Image 1 (cartoon, rainbow, N blue to C red):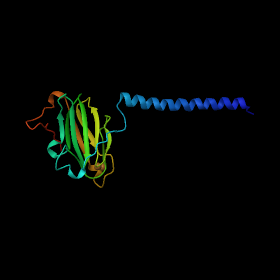
Image 2: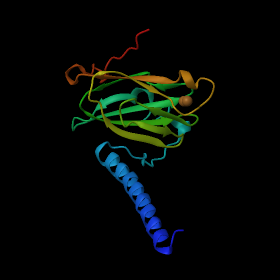
Image 3: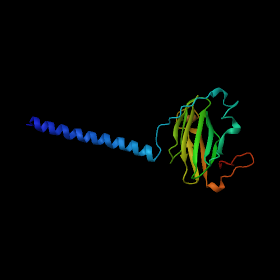
Image 4: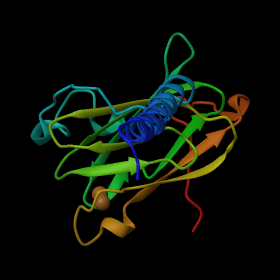
Length: 180
Ligand code: CUA
């Protein structure tokens, strides 16, 4: 038979186990958000999806990556059934890159493997993610939000180039072609 003291002790022991588990979970969240920049996207910026092609930040000529005066890079893309525009996005390595993406039709999403870039793209809003690519190479950027029959064919390539080979032409664009 357990007496009242034993029961109290058992309860306190299990209480401590639960408190330790909660503490560990909170610590993982704090450490990953502080050191790995993992956090829910918090950009709330509205845009009219019906006029993207007519004017403003997301007109076709303004898509792709451009260098800012401070040396960082801003990349603008449109998510649409069933492609990201542009399909190949050249960016320099070891440089802060701000990805700005909006949808012209339905809800899409994107993830770039090995980075913190992972968010939904909701029509009417601009999704913004800041990241830095450490290693040059081609990174697959698939749509990860079911958006219709062509969902599985919806992807772009992020081509991370050594900083010295990321050079814009006269139009301010960097060439990027997908093999095949
Ligand atoms: Cu776009 Cu799935």
